[in-house]
Amino acid sequence: MDNLISVENLVVEYKTSGLSGEKTVRAVDNISFDIKKGEILAVAGESGCGKSTLAKTLIKLQNAASGKITYPAEWKNKEFFKKVQMVFQNPFASLNPKMKIKDILKEPLDINTNLSDKEKENQVLEIIEKVGLKAEHLDLYPHEFSGGQRQRIAIARALILKPELLIADEPVSALDVSIQAQIINLLKELKNEFNLTIVFISHDLGVIKYIADRTIVMYLGEIAEAGKKEEIFDSPKHPYTKELLASVPDRKQKFNSVMKELNTDDNIYPCKFYPRCRTPYDFCKDVCPRFTSVSETHIVKCHIFDYEEKEKWGK
Ligand SMILES: Nc1ncnc2c1ncn2[C@@H]1O[C@H](COP(=O)(O)OP(=O)(O)O)[C@@H](O)[C@H]1O
Ligand SMILES: [Mg+2]
Image (cartoon, rainbow, N blue to C red):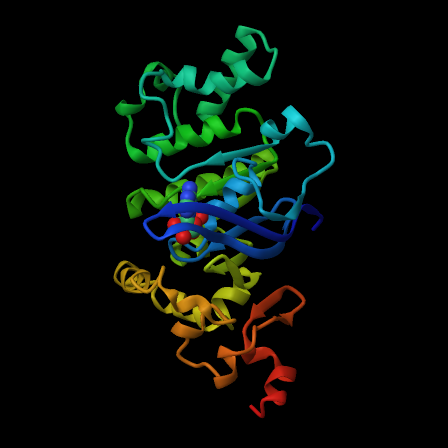
């Protein structure tokens, strides 16, 4: 598969001020990866690991502190904002409550195209049906829909300009489990129909398993492991990925316990995962792990697979 976008050594920081003075939070910490044309690339990791920051930076809502994102050459200026669209977690907050659905869907066409009213109307009709809703829904307001229907409307609005890249940030996390599968199936269908590339962000590996072609697992702003779906789900290598997978059935509980440990000063070690690792080597607290390749498509940032480093330390 050809690359659509490549991300190199991306760093994104927030400056915050509080009682203890100004602080810099490094939300995305030197990550590199490619997005391949036509794939569904999932980004996994628990709350606070930098997924939304990465999404916002990809869609140019957030500046990078350093690093480089390379987009296709033809995505210049105004064109960029047609080619890349985003769907957010909360379909309640992302749709203007005072606008009818037909106006919500028409707005991107008003802003970005010179189509006639009739042409816009036709496109609105076409897209509402593509997401599984009906023409009669167009005259209603957002509050008249369920969460799942609202997310369908948000997806329709994102697709009406025929983008090439859709970034979906926790698009099913606010929905009932019974509705999640419908929206995931819809995204898969639309991917084929619109020739989309999708970046699908979720803290929930149970959801990612249904949709991803490849998965990147993030931990505190870094990539811990990345590979094809089967590689991550059937043969995870990083202790963090293993922990996340083990927590899938009772994920609510586990995630809560895990989140308590975030935002402490623990992450001063060269391996950010060291304080939580159940199987560390003693040298892990002094040596920064580097990426090793498990296969051509599978990388992991952990000393377990760095045989050279292990030999140096007699492990
Ligand atoms: N606007 C902001 N100002 C300051 N810190 C932020 C801001 N947005 C996010 N952060 C911090 O950046 C880190 C990553 O956040 P985020 O990208 O939202 O993670 P995720 O989407 O994986 O939950 C967190 O520590 C979060 O508190
Ligand atoms: Mg987020």
